Amino acid sequence: MANKDSIKQTLIVAGALCVVCALVVSSAAVSLKPQQEANQVTDRKTNILAAAGLLQEGVSIDEQFESVEIRVVDLRTGEFTDEVDADGYDQLKAAKDPSLSTKLSANEDSAKIFRREHFATVYLVKKDDALDKLILPVRGYGLWGTLYGFLALENDANTVAGLGFYDHKETPGLGGEVDNPNWKALWPGKEIYSNGTPVIKLVKGSVDPASPMASNSVDGLSGATLTSRGVTNLLQFWMSDLGYKPFLEKLRNGEV
Image (cartoon, rainbow, N blue to C red):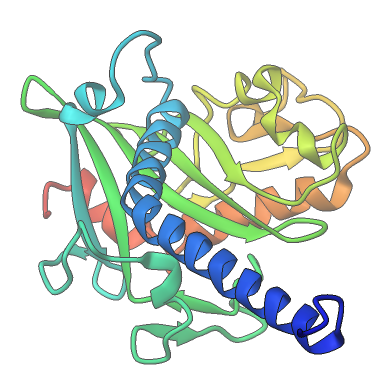
């Protein structure tokens, strides 16, 4: 009779257990994938609406998103394009593909993103068939990693409606204060451009209301100089000629 405590028997039992566990985990992963993907879509929609100050409690996200039109912009021309499918396009993945992105020089790359994708997904909020708000994906390096978020603009394509970051690695209580509702409440009404140049920035301490740049400035994050600088850099990059500026100018002029 075989010894049930033998090394061979132990290995057989362990191997069988591993196979069973692997099958269970694989089956769970496959069966849960559609739900996970749906949750990701819902989470993205939630962050887009929240950035623009449009998120309503007690109303389904899909229902709220019905007023949002998703379009793709060619950042090289500043025009809408149908070259890529808006629903299936992964902007962050494209930024890593040399055929779908442009490598930035050190002088160009103030946001420290290394490559800028050719196409960007933008979100147009309509009200009575007219543009009410515009929501743009933005990203850039802070202190410990890249901040990913959405910048919402009013229909003048200059006045900030809101700013929110949905993913970052900043220090809680310092740079992590980008999540603080009180700080985010400082953004609406601020202006991106002055004489066509993106000058929006975070300042050390509090904004001086008497400053000629008060409308273009936001209170810095206390104790988080590098995060504050990163937010300034990423916004000025994405609002520049390398980012959305050509598109925003054409939008203001009714050319797109």
